Length: 507
Ligand code: XMP
Image (cartoon, rainbow, N blue to C red; front, top):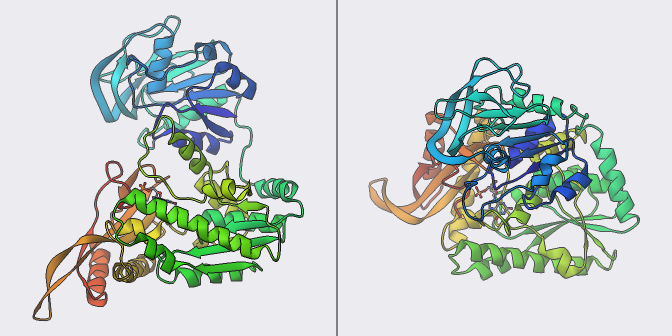
């Protein structure tokens, strides 16, 4: 295992995933963990991530110095590189910023083995290491940064100012692979055969008990349901319709679970209750809270109802690794951007024990596992859909009329994306309805209607995203169809914002 110490970087997950793809299991840990704790985990290597702070700032995150005495190979990236320098007695100062592609001049090095003398790397920093720590060799420099890489190969401690984990560092994977080799090489970690292990774990937890699963039709809950079902026949799948789901979603999810021969699948229509509670609410976080709490209430009622069949003791969820890490982080280093709704409040309230077979996996690993389980590509590559559904795609007040318009417009967009092959080329795409009206002309008359905005993004993990460069002909077709078929919409926009600064959803 390699531990990734997260100093608040947006890229910590990317580092962890890249290392996993090199055959080593990874876990992300808080920067406050003590060296003694890390030692007990017996990791083969440690990576210190980047972070938004400056190491010389008062109260900035630091490193347990003893970590450097454990004899475990360490790689510091960006903030991690600067932190290593500082802890080892060198100076870090504010300097000319480097943001984006830079050229790295490479010297002979264990970490940078196999790289050309000049390499394109991606950097994002405002501080720089002034001199290499004693006993360390400088092995890389960029135009603005003389100490862009240093190492002490006896101590197996390495630092790079640039980001080897991002794709713009052309040979970044070589650097990470070199580090993995230094730590003892790949250990054959892979998804293959993992299903058997996970099923065995579920069996030993649940025994002859029963599990209730909250399902959404999405990839994670689907793969989790299939694993749980393989472990026990006592599985009750519940799909709560809060009235903010996509057109045809209800039929599609029911059909999916029927096709997969789930014996107990329950559809709960709670649309009226949710919409009643959302009436007049404009604040996005309030919307999320109302939806989350109402979800718990509806779900709880269903569990009570199912008591006549089984005394359910377990709640199955499709929680994946980033969900866990991010919800933990929300209370610590990272600022809360949005509280993502899940059914996390349920087990505590209802005294249910959690069954989360995917809790250590990334989305791409879940998809791979799903493939191993024989699930179809179209189910596994379904775009993510937020828990609060269309409520976060209708900024401001949510009304049945707005929902109806949005469902139609979104269905048109999805149909055209699928037909053109662009659905599979985007991470996520959807229509949203803006809370303003605009003038149009329809026939010979003045029209005054809503504005639909189309959003399609490419991404690897939803932490950052770029707007998808959809062909203009496709956008034109979608726009024409929407304004023609969806009464009450006079304008269609295409959103060309990146995340950050925008987010993927509208609220
Ligand atoms: P943002 O909008 O934060 O979205 O860029 C990142 C990813 O998370 C999804 N998302 C949510 N998922 N509950 C969820 O279960 C939520 O409240 C929520 N908000 C955003 C979003 O669809 C994207 O995939």
